[in-house]
Amino acid sequence: MSRFPSALPSTGGIRYTDYLARTTLRAWVGMSFVGASLLILGGLALSWLIVYTAGGADSIVPHFYYVPILFAAARFGAGAALVVALVAGVLAGPMTPVDVTAGIAQETERWLTRTGFFVGIGQLMAWLVIPALHPVTEELRRMRQEFDIRRGLRHNEFFLRYQPIYSLAQERHVGVEALIRWQHPIRGELSPAEFLDVAEDSTLIHDICDLALDEGCRQAAAWKALAAEHGRPAWYVAINLSAHDIVRPEMAAHVAAALDRHRLPPELLHIELTETVLAMDAATDALKQLKSLGIQLAIDDFGTGYSSLAYLNRFPIDILKIDRQLISGLGIDPSAHDLSRGMVLLAESLGLRTIAEGVETKEQLAIGRELKFDCIQGYYFARPLRAEEIPSLLLSDTPRIGHLHAVRY
Image (cartoon, rainbow, N blue to C red):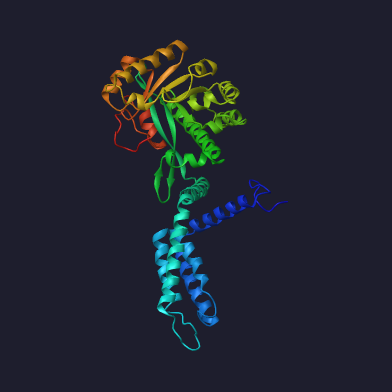
C-alpha cells in the first residue's frame, strides 16, 4: 500500500513535489507566532554555532542561514525575511572569523556580498510564496474552525434563538423559527454566517442540524404543554435544514424519531429549505418522505434564488417565505411591491401560505396587510429570542414591539 495520499497520482514526480511543497508551507504557516519566532532564532544561532565550531568561514560555507531566512519569508513575509537576512549577514560576517583559531576577521566586501545574497534569496522566496499563501492560510483557518466547531459541539456551546412569527389573519403569534447560534468562549455569540460554511464542507453540518432538530422539537413540546395549561393555542417551530441534510437517506427517520421522542404532533414542526434544494436530483424522494410524516415544508428566502416555478408544483411545498431583501424595499421601491404582490397571487393560486421575512417598520406592516401576506416575521414584533424569553410572549394577549437594533439574524 502506498504511503502517500490516494489523491496523488502514482506517476509524475512534479505532482508529488507540488504536494510536498504545499504540505511544508501549510506546516510553516500553521505554526504559532511564538513557535515560529523561536525556530528562526534557534536556526540563526545553530547556523552560527556550526560555522564557528567547524573552524570559521574558510572551513565551511555558511549556507545553513538560508533555512531560517526562507522560513521567515514563508511564515511572516518579505519584511521579516529582510530582518532575518540582515541579522544572518551580521552573524555570518563580523561575528564569524575566517579562522577561529587565528582570530582573523573576514573582509568587509566578502560578508557584505554574502549578506546581499541572503537578502535577495529571502525576498525572492517571499515573492514566490505570495500566490500560494492566501489559499493555504484559508485552508488552515477552515481546519482550525472545524476543530473548534467539534470542540464546541462536545461542550454544548451551540444553542437556538427563536424568531416569533405573527399571523396577520389571527392577529397573534403562531410559531417561531429556530436559528442556530454558537456561544463561543472567546468570540462571544456567533451567527450561522460565521461557521456554517465550514460545517457544510464536512460532516459537522449533520451534527448541527440534528442538534437543532432535537432541541427545536423539545422546546416546541414544552411550549405546547405550557400553552395547553393556560388555554392558549400551541406554537409551531420551524427548523432550517441544509441541503446536505435534506437529501440524507436517514433524514426522514431522524425527523420521525425526534417527533416521537418529544411527543410533538407533526403539524407543529415546519422544515425550511433553500431554493437550491429543489434543483437537487435526490430532493423529490427526500421531500416526499418528510411530507409523509405530516410536517409542513417551507421554501426559505423565496424570490432571490434559482428555483423555477415548475418546482412549486413538483414538490409538496406548503409555505413560501418571501426574502427579507424584497420586503426591505416595500414603500421604497415600486418593483418590490409589484413582485411581492405577484408572489402572493402565485401562492394563492397554488394553495400555499406566505410569510414575509424581515418586517421592521410600521409601513412595511401596513403594506403586508394590504398585500395579504398570511404571516410576517421580523423585528417590528420581536427579535430572535432565547428559549426562556418565549413563554412570556406565548402567554401574552398583545404582541410586543421588537428592538430594531438588537442582535441581528
